[in-house]
Length: 466
Ligand code: FRU
Image 1 (cartoon, rainbow, N blue to C red):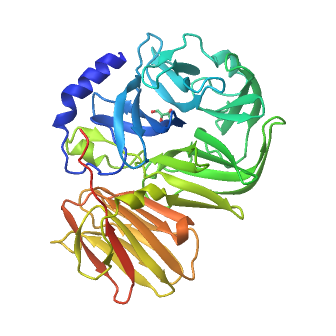
Image 2: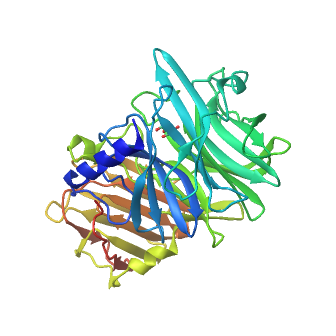
Image 3: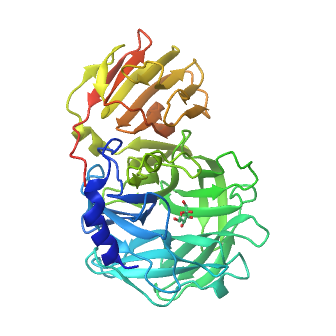
């Protein structure tokens, strides 16, 4: 497989994608499958977001790296596919990260996992690809992390998703892994020149990293470190979702291999957010983007034959205050607001909204319902202590009720609605709920408890990108 084949295929098939559930201001593949965001980077004045991509079908397949670019993190353009599995020993370019070369800001490096799965052998190794224009990437033939470098510490079949963290003159590469004992951990490698990497230390945290730790990302902010990571918990029954996205706030001393853990939690309390990655931009912001889907969930647009599947969450600014993690939509979204309408019971409104509910201590219910079938709805409620979201009545893809992890004696909400998604931010981003909502209507009718005050901003929809 080559990038050219993939790009030709995309050009030929992008117009046949069914637009019904296409989003207006979220990253999506033009055609085919998307999972994890990869290689989030601010490069040459623009935001680049790569992603796990299989253009040829709306199901997971041999992984390519799709490529999106944006000036404002809200409207994305598609660039040609950056990586394709093109060698005999490679059955997929799995997740990883990007880094602008510290000595040459025109040079962009991608770090990714080479997945080999043939003839009963599964092997995952780490590799690099480099570009001088941010469009064409050339893979380095030599691996940076071989199976031999891993074998003493972890299963060579499950070691993936390299993340870079630079501390002083050392570049650390953190990879997700499963130990020989079947427990998840991270392996940390180090390099002084980006050419050769050496094993540095193991990062274990018993009970925290599941059976497989994957998709790490680390940043340093306000004297704290933040690790976001995903994990697979194989001990859960098969009918349960076994994947989750998590974080640890702590003090991480990479040089000494000591990672002091202060607070941990789950990134999102809703149904669909996985494999989040982090980006630091020129404004000093830390931005999180996740896959707005989840392994094990119903694949609605695939099952409907819409020829695409998967999207990215809205980019969120991450802050840590008093060891509490906050997530908030990037400010750029507000430029897309076209009006401000008071929230009213019974209003019918299109699906691209930025809606706020003013702070209240009173319990309430707010439903985004099918305009003709009021019972089919995504319902947000507050009972005076907890927030709950519930989409059990949605016929295409019912969503089980989810309750906030925190108790709140008052709440304010911000709710970002797109064609097939609802992202809820509670109390300035103290907790979030992200869900794909597939209700077959062009508009929602809003049902809200009388007395609840709020504002509905419609968002200027952009042309659905093909
Ligand atoms: C997480 C993940 C990664 C892997 C990629 C493959 O969703 O399983 O660990 O690199 O997806 O597409």
